[in-house]
Amino acid sequence: MKDIQALFRANRSLEEAGPMEAYMKNQFTFLGIKAGKRKKLLAEFIKENGAPTDLLDYVIVLFKEEEREFQHVAIDLLSRYGKEQPREAIQVYEKLIVTKSWWDTVDGLAGTIISNHFKLYPDLIPTYNEAWINGENIWLARTAILFQLKYKEQTDTELLFSNCEKWLSSKEFFIQKAIGWALRQYAKVDSEAVRVFVNTHPLAPLSRREALKHIGDT
Image (cartoon, rainbow, N blue to C red; front, side):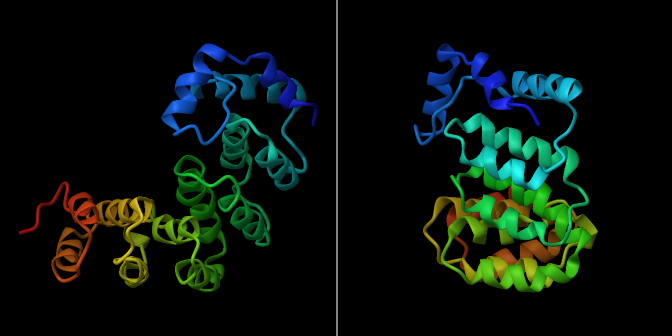
């Protein structure tokens, strides 16, 4: 695949980069390419050059790039072409979760890429979920809490509640937010189960507020 990096750097905007970097707490350098333009550039590039044939290797390369847009491009590519990767791809996804970690990339990987991969290979869930939820990396734990976001009635409720329980005492904003988000999403399927869980466990105020946002506590 030809150099997509050159195309994106040729379209950088210093005027847009500043606010984008500020929004992300100045943790990453940006080219200043917003999501809409990023997707348009990527679509044009693929139309001219074709999709990557070495997708997993290619996204690893993109995650090593300094500018944040390249990590987003990697997730765009995985979302479009990575739906039926070999089971071993989970090792790549795990590596991406802990590379340049922040909510913008982790949530895209957890809620779509890893979510779909676990649906394809459900036997992987016990091993990876246990390692992630019992480890010390908050981004892997957040992934374990969030990967069932789109499972709806297929949600493993016992696993969801167990994952939340293990991190209830965490002071990390991104963990508290993930717990509330996961519970709020499942409340669309079984509001009473979520209400009971929330009212019988010591959730952080943020988690509780998010979980009960649309259903109330009684």
